[in-house]
Length: 201
Image (cartoon, rainbow, N blue to C red; front, side, top):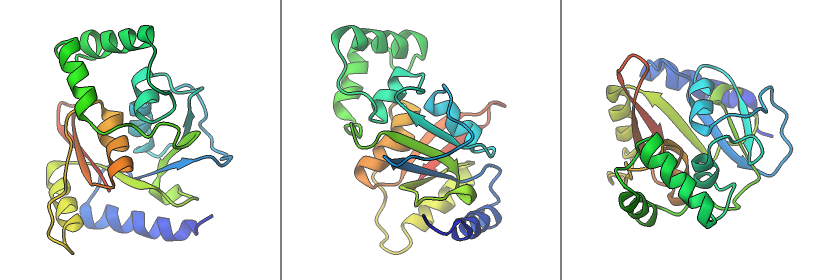
């Protein structure tokens, strides 16, 4: 266990200096038994949005409701034929993430491999509530705050982050950073049609 107070101070600094509307999130992959108020059926992307407002979620294969989220966050292995067809249909006809099954397959092959079997569960919680060391921090912020975070990330070495913008939210906001160690940016439209950026460090 890490000192919760350290994370509280770090979260407070981020919120004050950047003027964040949403809580910075601590995301941890773990095999340990974790107690949290929220162990219930939910999608990864919904958990990210609710956690940014103060809730905490423990997610594993049993409660992850999105087949894409389960795949991209490493709970399930390479899909069988029928599972793949369902995911193709969901992401091309339902979510409309890509325009065809061909572009879906291309996206799959050209993106970073998911963290398959890395851990049994993922803990998503506001940084100030974190009780174990996060594997990454996720910021949901506006474009100006995103620019400041990217500048902070490159302050010491001046090397531009290698980013992967295409893909499902769970992939671009969690899996890519976990597997590569790179800071990434994931763009989405907010509820009021305002552009939001998810910055992962």
